[in-house]
Image (tube, rainbow, N blue to C red; front, side, top):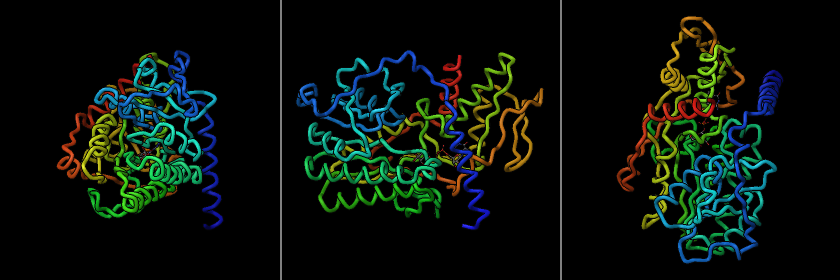
Length: 393
Ligand code: GDD
C-alpha cells in the first residue's frame, strides 16, 4: 500500500470507529423482561422428553429469531436458542417467546470451543442450526480476526463436536452470497465459483469448505445454504435496508412535526443486491435440512435492485416528494417543495472493496425442495418502513 493510500485507509477506519461509538437509540429495552439463559452444566433443568431437539445459535438476531418462530409454529421440536453473556442483554427479537414452553435459552459463546462442545455433549441435539456470526461485511475489515474466529473457526469446532459426539445430528451453517463476491456470471447458481471480496466473505467461504470436507469425510448431514440478502423489521440498523427504512421514518416524523430534518447519509448507491424478506428463507432452510441426502442450495429472489432503488421506493411509501441532484459522491435528495436536504452520499460508507452486484438463481431450490416465497421487494419495503414509522411514534 502506498503511503497516501495508507493514510486514507487509516482516516477511513477512524471515521468508522467513531461512528460506531455513537450510541444508537434503544427501542423497547426498558420494557423488556430478560429471558433467563441456562448453563448447559445444569442439565436437570433441560428438557428431557423424546421430542426432537434443535439448537439455534444467533437466536437474538434476525435469522435465528425467525428460525425459532418457524420451528415453534411448524414443528413440535424443542428449540434451544443460544446466547453469549453480555452486560446489557438484547432480547428484542425473542421477547415474545419468553413464556413459550418449547423454547429455552442456553449459554454458548462462539469463541469458546468448550462451550460449543458442552452444548452438543449435554443436549445431544437432532439438529444444529448455526445462524450466529459476525455478519456485517463492512465491519469485517475492522475486526478481521474476530470475523474469522466466529465465522470460520467456530464452525470447525461445531463440526468436530458433532462428528465426535452426535454424528447423526444434522448441521446447517448460514452461508452467504458474499462468498461469490466478484461475480463472473449473472445470476449466480450453486455452480458459481467462490470469489469473496471481504474478510467476511472469505471466512464464510472457508466455512463452506470445512462443511464439505466433514460431510464427505465422515458422512455427516452437514450443509451450508447460500442466502442472498434478506431483510425485515428485525434487521440491525447497520445494514443498508434498515438504515434506510429507519432513516426515512425519522425524516417523515420530522416533517410531520415541523422539526429539523435528520439527514440520512449513505455509501455506494449503485450497489445492486437481491433482497428477499428474511421470513421467506426459513422454510427453505428447514426443507434443506430434511432431505434424504445433504445438498447445498441458493436462496434468493432472482431480482436485483440498487441501493438507490430501495431508497426511492421507501420515499415513495413514505409519501415524501423529492428531487435528486448530483452524481456519485455529490448525489443528494431534497424535499421537492422546500429544497431541504434529506439524503446525501457520504464516501465514509464506501468499502475498501465492494461487491457491486449479486443476484441469485434459486431454481434448484424451487424445483428440488418445492421452496416458495410469499413476499416481494415492494411488500418488503412497505413492511420495513411501516414498522420503523410506528416504532418511532
Ligand atoms: N451497510 C451499509 N450502509 N451499506 C451501504 C450503505 C450504508 O450506508 N450505503 C451503501 N451501501 C451498500 C454496501 O456498500 C453494499 O453494497 C450494500 O449496500 C448492502 O450492504 P449491507 O446492507 O451492509 O449488506 P451486505 O450485502 O454487505 O451483506 C448482507 O448480505 C449478505 C448476503 O449477501 C449481510 O446480511 C451479510 O451477513 C450477508 O451474508
